[in-house]
Image (cartoon, rainbow, N blue to C red; front, side):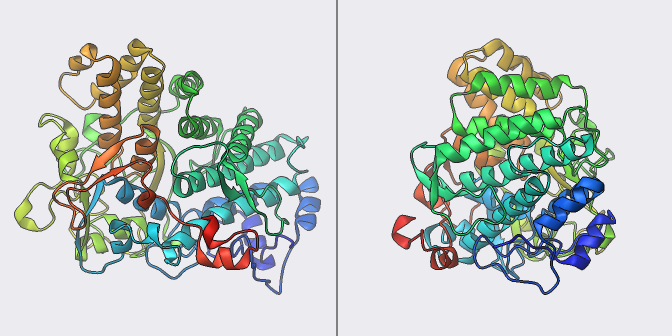
Length: 506
Protein backbone atom coordinates (compact mmCIF):
# COMPACT_ATOMS: atom_id res chain seq x y z
CA UNK A 1 0.00 0.00 0.00
CA UNK A 2 1.42 3.37 -0.99
CA UNK A 3 2.18 5.98 1.63
CA UNK A 4 -0.26 8.83 1.15
CA UNK A 5 -0.83 12.29 2.49
CA UNK A 6 -3.54 14.81 1.86
CA UNK A 7 -2.57 17.07 -1.00
CA UNK A 8 -4.02 20.24 0.39
CA UNK A 9 -2.35 19.74 3.73
CA UNK A 10 0.90 18.81 2.00
CA UNK A 11 0.79 22.23 0.34
CA UNK A 12 0.35 23.78 3.77
CA UNK A 13 3.38 21.91 5.04
CA UNK A 14 5.46 23.04 2.09
CA UNK A 15 4.48 26.57 3.00
CA UNK A 16 6.25 25.94 6.34
CA UNK A 17 3.34 26.97 8.49
CA UNK A 18 3.77 26.70 12.24
CA UNK A 19 0.30 25.32 12.92
CA UNK A 20 -0.39 21.62 13.25
CA UNK A 21 -3.27 19.36 12.35
CA UNK A 22 -4.18 15.79 13.12
CA UNK A 23 -4.50 15.29 9.36
CA UNK A 24 -1.04 16.54 8.40
CA UNK A 25 -0.02 12.95 7.74
CA UNK A 26 -2.87 10.56 7.23
CA UNK A 27 -1.53 7.28 8.58
CA UNK A 28 -4.09 5.14 10.30
CA UNK A 29 -1.77 2.49 11.65
CA UNK A 30 0.46 -0.06 10.05
CA UNK A 31 -2.42 -2.02 8.61
CA UNK A 32 -5.79 -0.92 7.29
CA UNK A 33 -4.82 2.58 6.13
CA UNK A 34 -7.62 4.83 5.00
CA UNK A 35 -7.52 6.23 1.47
CA UNK A 36 -8.07 9.99 1.12
CA UNK A 37 -9.45 11.03 -2.24
CA UNK A 38 -6.67 13.59 -2.68
CA UNK A 39 -3.26 12.00 -2.27
CA UNK A 40 0.37 12.36 -3.18
CA UNK A 41 2.62 9.33 -3.48
CA UNK A 42 6.18 8.91 -2.35
CA UNK A 43 7.17 8.98 -6.02
CA UNK A 44 5.72 12.48 -6.39
CA UNK A 45 7.39 13.53 -3.16
CA UNK A 46 10.71 12.15 -4.40
CA UNK A 47 10.37 14.00 -7.68
CA UNK A 48 9.72 17.25 -5.86
CA UNK A 49 12.63 16.81 -3.47
CA UNK A 50 15.14 16.73 -6.33
CA UNK A 51 14.23 20.26 -7.35
CA UNK A 52 13.09 21.79 -4.08
CA UNK A 53 14.82 20.71 -0.83
CA UNK A 54 12.18 22.64 1.12
CA UNK A 55 9.69 19.86 0.34
CA UNK A 56 11.29 17.04 2.39
CA UNK A 57 12.26 19.56 5.07
CA UNK A 58 8.65 20.65 5.32
CA UNK A 59 7.50 17.05 5.44
CA UNK A 60 9.86 16.44 8.37
CA UNK A 61 8.30 19.45 10.10
CA UNK A 62 4.96 17.73 9.62
CA UNK A 63 6.28 14.74 11.56
CA UNK A 64 7.26 17.02 14.43
CA UNK A 65 3.74 18.44 14.33
CA UNK A 66 2.35 14.96 14.94
CA UNK A 67 4.23 14.87 18.23
CA UNK A 68 1.83 17.43 19.71
CA UNK A 69 -1.31 16.61 17.74
CA UNK A 70 -4.47 15.73 19.61
CA UNK A 71 -5.74 12.38 18.35
CA UNK A 72 -2.42 11.31 16.82
CA UNK A 73 -2.92 7.97 18.55
CA UNK A 74 -6.05 7.45 16.50
CA UNK A 75 -8.63 8.02 19.24
CA UNK A 76 -10.87 10.74 20.60
CA UNK A 77 -9.64 10.13 24.14
CA UNK A 78 -8.59 13.15 26.17
CA UNK A 79 -5.33 11.39 27.02
CA UNK A 80 -4.35 11.17 23.31
CA UNK A 81 -2.14 14.16 22.49
CA UNK A 82 1.22 12.96 21.23
CA UNK A 83 4.54 12.28 22.92
CA UNK A 84 3.74 13.96 26.20
CA UNK A 85 0.68 11.72 26.60
CA UNK A 86 2.91 8.66 26.72
CA UNK A 87 5.36 10.41 29.00
CA UNK A 88 2.53 10.45 31.54
CA UNK A 89 1.79 6.76 30.94
CA UNK A 90 5.42 5.88 31.63
CA UNK A 91 5.70 8.07 34.71
CA UNK A 92 2.61 6.39 36.16
CA UNK A 93 3.79 2.88 35.33
CA UNK A 94 7.09 3.60 37.09
CA UNK A 95 5.18 4.56 40.24
CA UNK A 96 6.97 7.89 40.54
CA UNK A 97 3.83 9.74 39.45
CA UNK A 98 0.97 9.01 41.80
CA UNK A 99 -2.67 9.39 40.88
CA UNK A 100 -3.93 10.84 44.16
CA UNK A 101 -7.48 11.81 43.17
CA UNK A 102 -9.53 10.75 40.17
CA UNK A 103 -12.84 12.49 39.67
CA UNK A 104 -12.74 12.11 35.87
CA UNK A 105 -11.03 8.70 35.75
CA UNK A 106 -8.90 9.35 32.67
CA UNK A 107 -5.85 7.56 34.05
CA UNK A 108 -7.52 4.92 36.18
CA UNK A 109 -6.77 2.12 33.72
CA UNK A 110 -3.08 3.06 33.65
CA UNK A 111 -2.75 3.55 37.40
CA UNK A 112 -4.65 0.31 38.08
CA UNK A 113 -2.47 -1.54 35.52
CA UNK A 114 -5.55 -2.65 33.62
CA UNK A 115 -4.53 -1.50 30.13
CA UNK A 116 -1.19 -3.27 30.37
CA UNK A 117 -2.97 -6.52 31.22
CA UNK A 118 -5.70 -6.39 28.56
CA UNK A 119 -4.95 -5.89 24.86
CA UNK A 120 -8.54 -4.77 24.17
CA UNK A 121 -8.02 -1.51 26.08
CA UNK A 122 -7.51 1.56 23.92
CA UNK A 123 -4.27 2.77 25.51
CA UNK A 124 -2.43 -0.12 23.86
CA UNK A 125 -3.76 0.98 20.47
CA UNK A 126 -2.95 4.66 20.99
CA UNK A 127 0.73 4.03 21.72
CA UNK A 128 1.06 1.56 18.84
CA UNK A 129 -0.60 3.81 16.28
CA UNK A 130 1.21 6.98 17.35
CA UNK A 131 4.74 5.59 17.11
CA UNK A 132 4.08 3.62 13.94
CA UNK A 133 2.68 6.78 12.39
CA UNK A 134 5.95 8.52 13.17
CA UNK A 135 7.85 5.57 11.69
CA UNK A 136 5.81 5.44 8.48
CA UNK A 137 6.18 9.18 8.02
CA UNK A 138 9.93 8.94 8.54
CA UNK A 139 10.08 6.05 6.08
CA UNK A 140 8.30 8.22 3.52
CA UNK A 141 10.92 10.94 3.81
CA UNK A 142 13.76 8.42 3.67
CA UNK A 143 12.35 6.78 0.56
CA UNK A 144 11.66 10.11 -1.14
CA UNK A 145 15.30 11.09 -0.61
CA UNK A 146 16.65 7.92 -2.23
CA UNK A 147 16.06 5.14 0.23
CA UNK A 148 17.70 3.59 3.27
CA UNK A 149 21.17 3.22 1.74
CA UNK A 150 21.30 6.50 -0.19
CA UNK A 151 23.20 9.63 0.83
CA UNK A 152 21.64 12.76 -0.69
CA UNK A 153 23.81 15.18 -2.62
CA UNK A 154 22.49 18.46 -1.27
CA UNK A 155 23.23 19.56 2.27
CA UNK A 156 19.56 20.40 2.86
CA UNK A 157 18.46 16.92 1.87
CA UNK A 158 21.18 15.37 4.04
CA UNK A 159 19.75 17.27 7.00
CA UNK A 160 16.22 16.03 6.19
CA UNK A 161 17.46 12.46 5.84
CA UNK A 162 19.34 12.73 9.14
CA UNK A 163 16.26 13.93 10.98
CA UNK A 164 14.04 11.29 9.41
CA UNK A 165 16.38 8.47 10.43
CA UNK A 166 16.58 9.82 13.97
CA UNK A 167 12.78 10.06 14.10
CA UNK A 168 12.44 6.47 12.94
CA UNK A 169 14.81 5.38 15.70
CA UNK A 170 12.85 7.51 18.20
CA UNK A 171 9.64 5.73 17.23
CA UNK A 172 11.11 2.26 17.53
CA UNK A 173 12.85 3.14 20.79
CA UNK A 174 9.63 3.99 22.58
CA UNK A 175 7.88 0.95 21.10
CA UNK A 176 10.60 -1.30 22.50
CA UNK A 177 10.30 0.35 25.89
CA UNK A 178 6.54 -0.07 26.08
CA UNK A 179 6.16 -3.47 24.40
CA UNK A 180 9.19 -5.44 25.63
CA UNK A 181 9.80 -6.06 29.32
CA UNK A 182 13.58 -5.95 28.95
CA UNK A 183 16.10 -6.36 26.19
CA UNK A 184 16.38 -9.98 25.08
CA UNK A 185 17.92 -10.00 21.63
CA UNK A 186 16.33 -13.21 20.40
CA UNK A 187 12.81 -12.30 21.49
CA UNK A 188 10.41 -11.54 18.62
CA UNK A 189 8.72 -8.32 19.64
CA UNK A 190 7.52 -5.96 16.87
CA UNK A 191 7.05 -5.74 13.10
CA UNK A 192 10.03 -3.89 11.59
CA UNK A 193 8.99 -1.49 8.81
CA UNK A 194 11.74 0.26 6.87
CA UNK A 195 9.67 1.29 3.84
CA UNK A 196 6.36 3.18 3.76
CA UNK A 197 4.78 0.76 1.29
CA UNK A 198 5.33 -2.44 3.27
CA UNK A 199 2.34 -4.67 3.82
CA UNK A 200 1.74 -6.56 7.02
CA UNK A 201 4.88 -8.09 8.47
CA UNK A 202 5.58 -10.60 11.24
CA UNK A 203 7.47 -9.70 14.38
CA UNK A 204 11.19 -9.09 14.15
CA UNK A 205 13.69 -9.81 16.90
CA UNK A 206 14.71 -7.19 19.42
CA UNK A 207 18.26 -7.56 18.12
CA UNK A 208 17.21 -6.59 14.59
CA UNK A 209 15.20 -3.60 15.81
CA UNK A 210 18.00 -2.34 18.05
CA UNK A 211 20.50 -2.83 15.22
CA UNK A 212 18.36 -0.65 12.98
CA UNK A 213 18.07 2.03 15.66
CA UNK A 214 21.83 2.07 16.14
CA UNK A 215 22.45 2.23 12.41
CA UNK A 216 19.89 5.00 11.93
CA UNK A 217 21.32 7.11 14.74
CA UNK A 218 24.93 6.57 13.68
CA UNK A 219 24.04 7.73 10.18
CA UNK A 220 21.91 10.56 11.54
CA UNK A 221 24.80 11.95 13.57
CA UNK A 222 26.95 12.04 10.42
CA UNK A 223 24.22 13.50 8.21
CA UNK A 224 23.39 16.24 10.73
CA UNK A 225 26.96 17.50 10.98
CA UNK A 226 26.76 21.26 10.46
CA UNK A 227 22.96 21.45 10.80
CA UNK A 228 21.91 24.68 12.50
CA UNK A 229 18.27 24.15 13.32
CA UNK A 230 15.73 26.95 13.17
CA UNK A 231 13.70 25.68 16.13
CA UNK A 232 14.33 23.34 19.07
CA UNK A 233 11.54 21.09 17.82
CA UNK A 234 14.00 19.84 15.19
CA UNK A 235 16.49 17.07 15.86
CA UNK A 236 20.09 18.21 15.54
CA UNK A 237 23.29 16.27 16.10
CA UNK A 238 23.06 16.67 19.89
CA UNK A 239 19.58 15.15 20.01
CA UNK A 240 20.63 12.27 17.75
CA UNK A 241 23.53 11.55 20.12
CA UNK A 242 21.23 11.70 23.13
CA UNK A 243 18.72 9.33 21.51
CA UNK A 244 21.59 7.00 20.66
CA UNK A 245 22.70 7.05 24.31
CA UNK A 246 19.17 6.15 25.43
CA UNK A 247 18.99 3.28 22.93
CA UNK A 248 22.34 1.91 24.11
CA UNK A 249 21.27 2.27 27.73
CA UNK A 250 18.13 0.24 27.09
CA UNK A 251 20.14 -2.43 25.26
CA UNK A 252 22.81 -2.61 27.95
CA UNK A 253 26.52 -3.33 27.82
CA UNK A 254 27.58 -0.12 26.07
CA UNK A 255 28.46 2.12 29.00
CA UNK A 256 31.68 3.45 27.49
CA UNK A 257 29.92 4.57 24.34
CA UNK A 258 27.06 6.11 26.33
CA UNK A 259 29.57 8.05 28.42
CA UNK A 260 31.29 9.31 25.26
CA UNK A 261 28.06 10.39 23.53
CA UNK A 262 26.67 12.20 26.57
CA UNK A 263 30.00 13.87 27.28
CA UNK A 264 30.11 15.15 23.71
CA UNK A 265 26.71 16.78 24.18
CA UNK A 266 27.79 18.28 27.52
CA UNK A 267 31.04 19.56 25.99
CA UNK A 268 29.22 21.13 23.04
CA UNK A 269 28.54 24.16 25.22
CA UNK A 270 25.13 24.55 23.61
CA UNK A 271 23.17 24.18 26.85
CA UNK A 272 23.47 24.99 30.54
CA UNK A 273 21.70 23.40 33.48
CA UNK A 274 18.90 25.27 35.22
CA UNK A 275 20.08 27.60 37.95
CA UNK A 276 18.45 27.51 41.39
CA UNK A 277 16.39 30.55 40.47
CA UNK A 278 14.80 28.61 37.58
CA UNK A 279 13.87 25.43 39.42
CA UNK A 280 10.89 26.58 41.51
CA UNK A 281 8.22 28.65 39.76
CA UNK A 282 6.20 31.34 41.46
CA UNK A 283 8.89 32.42 43.91
CA UNK A 284 10.18 35.46 42.08
CA UNK A 285 12.51 33.47 39.85
CA UNK A 286 12.27 32.30 36.26
CA UNK A 287 10.09 29.30 35.40
CA UNK A 288 12.46 26.83 33.77
CA UNK A 289 9.78 24.37 32.68
CA UNK A 290 7.40 26.28 30.41
CA UNK A 291 9.58 28.04 27.82
CA UNK A 292 11.45 26.37 24.98
CA UNK A 293 13.95 29.23 25.03
CA UNK A 294 15.36 27.99 28.33
CA UNK A 295 19.02 27.23 27.74
CA UNK A 296 18.57 23.95 29.62
CA UNK A 297 16.16 22.63 27.00
CA UNK A 298 17.82 20.55 24.30
CA UNK A 299 14.65 19.40 22.56
CA UNK A 300 11.18 20.86 22.89
CA UNK A 301 8.49 22.69 20.99
CA UNK A 302 7.17 26.23 21.06
CA UNK A 303 3.41 25.93 21.61
CA UNK A 304 1.57 28.77 19.88
CA UNK A 305 -2.14 29.74 19.84
CA UNK A 306 -2.64 28.27 16.37
CA UNK A 307 -1.80 24.82 17.76
CA UNK A 308 -5.18 25.06 19.51
CA UNK A 309 -4.14 23.18 22.64
CA UNK A 310 -6.35 23.47 25.69
CA UNK A 311 -7.79 20.98 28.12
CA UNK A 312 -6.68 18.03 25.96
CA UNK A 313 -2.94 18.48 26.37
CA UNK A 314 -0.08 17.67 28.70
CA UNK A 315 -0.61 20.93 30.57
CA UNK A 316 -4.33 20.18 30.72
CA UNK A 317 -3.62 16.93 32.51
CA UNK A 318 -0.75 17.90 34.82
CA UNK A 319 -0.78 21.61 35.59
CA UNK A 320 -3.16 22.74 38.34
CA UNK A 321 -2.60 26.36 37.30
CA UNK A 322 -4.25 25.70 33.96
CA UNK A 323 -7.94 25.23 33.36
CA UNK A 324 -7.28 21.54 33.61
CA UNK A 325 -7.96 18.14 35.07
CA UNK A 326 -4.98 18.75 37.32
CA UNK A 327 -6.99 21.60 38.81
CA UNK A 328 -10.50 20.12 38.63
CA UNK A 329 -10.00 16.72 40.23
CA UNK A 330 -7.56 14.36 38.52
CA UNK A 331 -4.44 15.01 40.59
CA UNK A 332 -1.03 13.73 39.55
CA UNK A 333 1.55 14.07 42.29
CA UNK A 334 5.02 12.91 43.18
CA UNK A 335 5.13 9.58 44.98
CA UNK A 336 5.22 10.21 48.73
CA UNK A 337 8.30 8.08 49.37
CA UNK A 338 10.19 9.75 46.54
CA UNK A 339 9.22 13.16 47.91
CA UNK A 340 10.45 12.16 51.36
CA UNK A 341 13.79 11.18 49.82
CA UNK A 342 14.40 14.80 48.77
CA UNK A 343 16.44 16.59 51.46
CA UNK A 344 14.78 19.59 53.10
CA UNK A 345 17.52 21.91 51.80
CA UNK A 346 17.21 20.68 48.20
CA UNK A 347 15.67 23.44 46.07
CA UNK A 348 13.52 20.85 44.26
CA UNK A 349 11.59 20.10 47.44
CA UNK A 350 9.79 23.36 46.80
CA UNK A 351 8.46 22.20 43.45
CA UNK A 352 5.70 20.25 45.17
CA UNK A 353 2.77 21.45 47.28
CA UNK A 354 3.11 19.73 50.63
CA UNK A 355 -0.13 20.60 52.44
CA UNK A 356 -1.93 17.29 52.89
CA UNK A 357 -5.08 19.01 54.17
CA UNK A 358 -5.59 20.77 50.83
CA UNK A 359 -6.37 17.64 48.84
CA UNK A 360 -3.64 18.59 46.39
CA UNK A 361 -1.01 16.73 48.32
CA UNK A 362 2.34 16.82 46.51
CA UNK A 363 1.11 18.10 43.15
CA UNK A 364 3.89 19.86 41.18
CA UNK A 365 2.35 23.30 41.68
CA UNK A 366 5.74 24.98 41.62
CA UNK A 367 7.46 22.95 38.93
CA UNK A 368 4.89 23.02 36.14
CA UNK A 369 3.05 26.31 36.25
CA UNK A 370 1.39 28.00 33.30
CA UNK A 371 -0.42 30.80 35.13
CA UNK A 372 -0.44 32.88 38.30
CA UNK A 373 -4.01 32.04 39.31
CA UNK A 374 -4.87 28.43 39.97
CA UNK A 375 -7.36 26.96 37.52
CA UNK A 376 -7.46 30.00 35.30
CA UNK A 377 -4.69 29.85 32.69
CA UNK A 378 -6.12 31.14 29.42
CA UNK A 379 -6.90 28.87 26.52
CA UNK A 380 -5.44 28.08 24.10
CA UNK A 381 -2.40 27.01 26.07
CA UNK A 382 0.88 28.58 24.96
CA UNK A 383 3.24 27.11 27.56
CA UNK A 384 5.77 24.93 25.76
CA UNK A 385 6.52 21.19 25.79
CA UNK A 386 9.93 19.91 26.89
CA UNK A 387 11.21 16.62 25.47
CA UNK A 388 14.80 16.68 26.69
CA UNK A 389 17.02 18.80 28.98
CA UNK A 390 20.79 18.91 29.37
CA UNK A 391 20.42 17.65 32.94
CA UNK A 392 19.53 14.27 31.41
CA UNK A 393 22.92 14.09 29.76
CA UNK A 394 24.75 14.74 33.05
CA UNK A 395 22.73 12.07 34.80
CA UNK A 396 23.01 9.53 31.99
CA UNK A 397 26.74 10.24 31.78
CA UNK A 398 27.08 9.67 35.52
CA UNK A 399 25.06 6.46 35.30
CA UNK A 400 27.12 5.08 32.41
CA UNK A 401 30.43 5.91 34.07
CA UNK A 402 29.33 4.37 37.37
CA UNK A 403 28.23 1.20 35.57
CA UNK A 404 31.64 1.07 33.86
CA UNK A 405 33.43 1.40 37.21
CA UNK A 406 34.65 4.90 36.44
CA UNK A 407 33.43 6.34 39.72
CA UNK A 408 35.48 9.53 39.56
CA UNK A 409 33.90 10.61 36.26
CA UNK A 410 30.47 9.59 37.56
CA UNK A 411 30.91 11.73 40.67
CA UNK A 412 32.01 14.70 38.54
CA UNK A 413 28.84 14.65 36.45
CA UNK A 414 26.53 14.02 39.41
CA UNK A 415 28.15 16.70 41.51
CA UNK A 416 27.87 19.25 38.69
CA UNK A 417 24.10 18.86 38.93
CA UNK A 418 23.80 18.58 42.69
CA UNK A 419 25.86 21.74 43.23
CA UNK A 420 22.96 23.57 41.56
CA UNK A 421 20.34 21.91 43.73
CA UNK A 422 21.92 21.81 47.22
CA UNK A 423 23.84 24.37 49.27
CA UNK A 424 26.59 21.78 49.71
CA UNK A 425 27.10 18.86 47.33
CA UNK A 426 30.30 17.56 48.91
CA UNK A 427 28.53 14.36 50.04
CA UNK A 428 28.93 13.13 46.44
CA UNK A 429 32.70 12.92 46.95
CA UNK A 430 32.26 10.02 49.38
CA UNK A 431 30.10 7.87 47.11
CA UNK A 432 31.35 4.85 45.19
CA UNK A 433 30.22 1.51 43.84
CA UNK A 434 26.57 0.58 44.34
CA UNK A 435 25.91 3.52 46.67
CA UNK A 436 26.94 5.87 43.85
CA UNK A 437 24.74 4.05 41.34
CA UNK A 438 21.80 4.21 43.72
CA UNK A 439 22.27 7.94 44.24
CA UNK A 440 22.44 8.63 40.50
CA UNK A 441 19.22 6.70 39.94
CA UNK A 442 17.50 8.54 42.80
CA UNK A 443 18.59 11.93 41.49
CA UNK A 444 17.41 10.99 38.00
CA UNK A 445 13.95 10.28 39.41
CA UNK A 446 13.88 13.54 41.39
CA UNK A 447 15.37 15.87 38.77
CA UNK A 448 13.31 14.59 35.85
CA UNK A 449 10.06 13.93 37.72
CA UNK A 450 7.04 14.42 35.46
CA UNK A 451 9.15 14.70 32.29
CA UNK A 452 8.63 11.18 31.01
CA UNK A 453 11.99 9.70 31.96
CA UNK A 454 11.24 7.68 35.12
CA UNK A 455 10.07 4.53 33.32
CA UNK A 456 13.12 4.56 31.05
CA UNK A 457 15.43 4.91 34.07
CA UNK A 458 13.60 2.18 35.97
CA UNK A 459 14.20 -0.26 33.11
CA UNK A 460 17.83 0.73 32.58
CA UNK A 461 18.57 0.31 36.28
CA UNK A 462 16.55 -2.91 36.58
CA UNK A 463 14.84 -1.37 39.57
CA UNK A 464 11.95 -2.37 41.79
CA UNK A 465 9.72 0.48 42.96
CA UNK A 466 7.21 0.39 45.82
CA UNK A 467 4.26 2.73 45.53
CA UNK A 468 3.95 5.26 48.34
CA UNK A 469 0.94 5.83 50.56
CA UNK A 470 -0.49 8.67 48.44
CA UNK A 471 -1.39 6.44 45.46
CA UNK A 472 -5.12 5.74 45.33
CA UNK A 473 -4.42 2.39 43.65
CA UNK A 474 -2.04 -0.32 44.89
CA UNK A 475 -0.33 1.82 47.55
CA UNK A 476 2.41 -0.24 49.14
CA UNK A 477 2.67 -2.67 46.22
CA UNK A 478 6.09 -3.28 44.67
CA UNK A 479 6.74 -3.72 40.96
CA UNK A 480 9.91 -4.85 39.26
CA UNK A 481 11.06 -3.18 36.05
CA UNK A 482 10.21 -6.34 34.07
CA UNK A 483 6.86 -7.05 35.67
CA UNK A 484 4.33 -8.21 33.08
CA UNK A 485 1.92 -5.60 34.42
CA UNK A 486 4.19 -2.77 33.24
CA UNK A 487 4.28 -3.91 29.59
CA UNK A 488 1.65 -2.86 27.06
CA UNK A 489 0.12 -5.43 24.73
CA UNK A 490 -0.10 -5.45 20.93
CA UNK A 491 -3.61 -4.05 20.41
CA UNK A 492 -6.59 -6.12 19.41
CA UNK A 493 -7.22 -4.43 16.06
CA UNK A 494 -3.60 -4.92 14.99
CA UNK A 495 -3.88 -8.62 15.77
CA UNK A 496 -7.14 -8.78 13.81
CA UNK A 497 -5.70 -6.91 10.79
CA UNK A 498 -2.26 -8.51 10.65
CA UNK A 499 -2.41 -12.24 9.85
CA UNK A 500 1.17 -12.71 11.13
CA UNK A 501 0.11 -11.80 14.67
CA UNK A 502 -2.11 -13.61 17.10
CA UNK A 503 -3.37 -13.24 20.64
CA UNK A 504 -1.27 -16.25 21.64
CA UNK A 505 1.82 -14.54 20.19
CA UNK A 506 1.71 -11.53 22.55
